[in-house]
Picture (cartoon, helix red, strand yellow):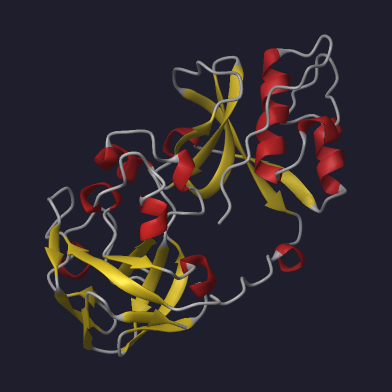
Length: 278
């Protein structure tokens, strides 16, 4: 599972902090070495000038300015200016996941999204299906946003809704209920255990903790929890809401590792120890 690959500030003579931090942010998002990016002119705005715009065009990409940066969120990485430097933001709501210059503090003044010139040509390849099956290690629900979770041995999944008794079914969660991909959330036990101390259910707030299966490989695929059919809809990326519950720096470490959002396709019960398979 991929983690954020941070690019450091480039060491180039005469490069201002804004340009250097912008290059580091852009290189981080593109997962390239910062030395591969061209240097903007001395008085050139790195986000609006021609140097990076033309270079990105050669990759089939562009920079789109954010109109209302104060209220903007994005389920992937984007670039924000805070004071004299740029940082990488991530999530809905968004938080800082990489500050190449360090010490950014204050209000966001402007932002940019790296976008494909033609999205049909830029669609990522579909992930490979999981090579192994997994098991259910934990089941958790919460009656409302912010409420402590309850751990269950058995839970009822309701088609088109989610886990009976959970906020996503009751309409009492942080985000709207009933939309595609909002019924059921899963996370891997191995990811939780990569933290010290391990992430708890009250921190990650996912419904199901699995072990032994690559959840990212279930995006766009039907899978089963026990005898109940589900469909993986999208990654369950982290956001500042989750970071607030955790009360410790987890946002950056969970990018692309925050689990799976799924829809429930049929009614049925799931239990601790159930097989999870595509």
